[in-house]
Length: 300
Ligand SMILES: NC(=O)c1ccc[n+]([C@@H]2O[C@H](COP(=O)([O-])OP(=O)(O)OC[C@H]3O[C@@H](n4cnc5c(N)ncnc54)[C@H](O)[C@@H]3O)[C@@H](O)[C@H]2O)c1
Image (cartoon, rainbow, N blue to C red; front, side, top):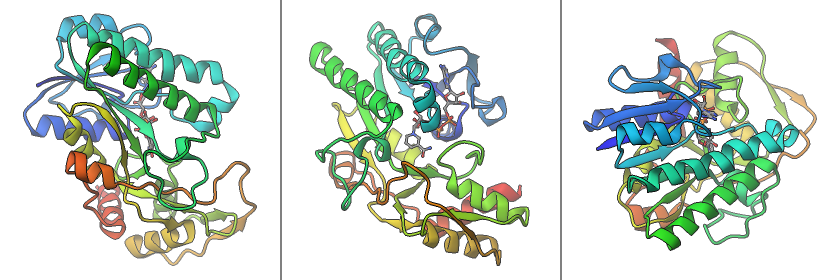
């Protein structure tokens, strides 16, 4: 297939590009390198430096893609609180521009949404129909973008898919970007620097390995359209995660304790049952295996 991956120079995008290249697709990346990097992009893919807000139409006309994996985003929750207008420009308006560019070429869009930022506080694994209670402009914008996809499916008969990712981790994740707790723990343990846990460490997240997320994107290709949770359904506390990182690295680090961070939800976990039945996808990589792969990649 001819594919455009927006955000393909970023963490998740670069793994999606690798998976598409591996199955023989012609892959074009649209990325403005705001947080991504050239080195992340597989040599077999073509990097087009540009912005989804202004350059999508031109690139789609040139490439004539059959598929667009739309991962480019302003993905930082704090930035979305400080600059909700910028967040909406990239995450809402940018997505509308992608939808229109894709419509001109009958291309399917597979979109990266978020579980954690859409469901808010969870009292168990949240299914797709659970109440949506975003607690940040970022979550609101992702939800709005999902509604555009669903609306385009109704209006134009497209088969666009929104995937609500849990907390994704793996090689090439940046410790400097928000949400990269795995990258932060591993990087600090590698450097022999101390780590810190904020709050009592009992707060839980659903950690899904990036290679499994790339497989979920492939599973969504040519689907008739919908919204699917992409996570493990397993709650891991930050203290448990820290212990698993120690196992992976052989570190003896004991974390210091800091005050709970304002706005941090206590429980965040998503139910992946629908993705299993409708897409035939499930997370295959255990946390220990995923951490070992991430650690090994960091040693190269
Ligand atoms: N990492 C996670 O745990 C997680 C969880 C849920 C959802 N997501 C979503 O997955 C997607 C990828 O996230 P990531 O963790 O790889 O982040 P990332 O920051 O590594 O990737 C985002 C990419 O988009 C590019 N980009 C940003 N603004 C752009 C613009 N205006 N035009 C073109 N390119 C632009 C960046 O340069 C970067 O390469 C995002 O949509 C994010 O919201 C991530």
